[in-house]
Amino acid sequence: MLAADPAEAGRRAVYQARESLGESQPTFGVLFASADYLGSAAVLLEAVTEQTGPMPLIGCVAESVVGGAREVESEPAVSLWLAAGLGPVETFAMDYVRTPSGGAIAGYRFEPGGPGVHLMICDPFTFPAEDLLTHLNEHVAGTVVIGGLASGGLASRRSRLFLDGQVRSSGAVGAYLPEAEVHSLVSQGCRPVGDPYTVTQANGNVIHELGGRPPLVRLQEMAARLSDQDKELLASGLQVGTVMDEYQSERHRGDFLVRGVIAADQESGAIAVGDQVEVGQTLQFQVRDADSADEDLRSMLDHEVDVLGDRRAVGALLFTCNGRGSHLFASPDHDAGMLAQLLGDIPVAGFFCAGELGPVGGRNYLHGFTASIALFPGEPSAPEPG
Image (cartoon, rainbow, N blue to C red):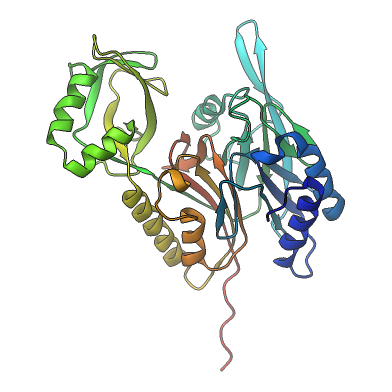
């Protein structure tokens, strides 16, 4: 939905989103707005809630938004997703509270063994999403978290999060759907190149040795063996991937947690990456590859269609990296367009994230360059009479 005026944009978004529900009354909403609405987020939200009435709702202002088969990257846009029949919906807010011993995450309690899924949107400046996911993996096994880091205020270090009828500027917002069936999909945007190495010396996020040699030496050795195409991809942006399952005998695309290389020391050959690294971890260099990303998403959605069988998807939420879109693909609307192509004309909303939340192999991770999808299947089709 495109409109510059926040009140008009909110009203039109509700009108369009209601069309997919027919006579059903919405019981849950997800609202995303482009960065054009950073200063008018409250006006937009008020216009939406005036039309829908009080109901559970989460969302954020984002760098760019997804609506239907479109990814709107350079125009004012609002995307509203309304749902009914999902069962109970519990919205919540969380905050990071500094304490004398460090800090604590407060505001909501995840119950061990709880069914369903948690949708979450986090402020990247005030909420340690990765710390929360690590805690859940270790202490609240079975919890499923899908979502992303808000991106609308990256330039000014200001975020706007939507929670029911309120606009928040810090922390995280979420919705717990204990009875809804939600299929979680995480599609990678990078692929490994060269050989994997064991981290043999590291301090925090700085890697000093890979397999006993400086990382830049390993990088130079690898680059000399790459094809011309891969050398071009390497020059456009270097990433590293740490193996998520060290016990896996073979590693392929999708088996790595990808992080960017943020600095390099030519003298020592060390590199700094966007995450903490431990000695003993397996690491492999990665490149952003549009063809590989396209193939991965297409394969994942094709498999999901097979899993659904005679059922069809009735809606989806798409949390895609702000490094995808026109930054990665030659044609517009890539991720949203592929959902429409393979799943049909279903209600889709989403945003371009500063990091994506999604489970892989039963554990929750903060990803980069991925498309993390919450897919809502419908009921089985009724058999044809006869």
